[in-house]
Amino acid sequence: MNSPIEIRKVIWGLILGIIFVAIFRFFPDSLMIDWTGTQTVQQMTALKPIIELIGLLIIVFYHIFNRAHPETNKLSLTAILTLCWLGLIIFYNFKDKANPNAGAIAFFALIGGLAVCVLWVRFFSDEIFVQQS
Image (cartoon, rainbow, N blue to C red; front, side):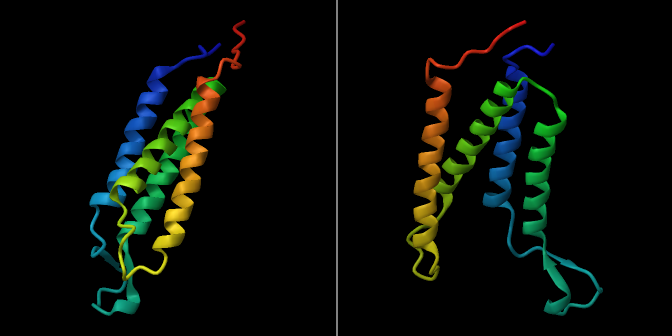
């Protein structure tokens, strides 16, 4: 039987979360995949969204296939969500006049902060009981 607390899974989840946030922050937008060998813009795909999707899939598959106690999975996913939310709050330019969606992103960042707070209150409450057999 798996132990209720597997700190190894949480730490590896945090490392994957830091790499995921670093992809958003430090990966250049100008890199493109040229599918035809020509330099036309219509035949090129941005590389950054593909790398971001691969990073998200790695995190999801890590939590699916690396079996652990359900409380450990929830703690690891909550920690990754917290890292992603902090990355958004710290690195996103909400005051950009050229971005018409900055207000909507700020609103959903506030809602995401509420979700992070609710999830951490769940972990810090005294009502959690893990039955060991």
